[in-house]
Length: 175
Image (cartoon, rainbow, N blue to C red; front, side):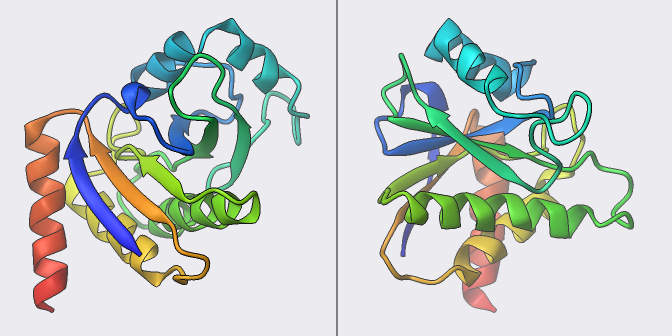
């Protein structure tokens, strides 16, 4: 599996899919979620509204994923992943976060995609410490099978976040 860490605006990446750090309602929000919804245009919101609720106000529970077209984005698809809200690390946050990465890659493969980009899921308003999130995410990505092959990009919005993720990646490679 090819994996790269880049500093970029995820809404500008021309790949098969980008992952949206979504909220459970899938109706947009702040941060990456809001940026993706704005860049994709109103058709993304309409597509998300068509995803059935599994509980009142919840279209995608924490740790799960859903897929929509990318609409006005360069990416053909958006995979919506709902990461955990950080509560100190003892409430299953690591498992839920790992599931976001694993299930996104599995869904991408299931629909025949060969490239995917992730933001730093849960590291914004959900408060997941970036070093811990990076360890979970990189481990989850490395634990997925290589068949069929898929290119994974970890997209950081700024140099500070990229430095964290690259340091965790370097530590993992030395272990």
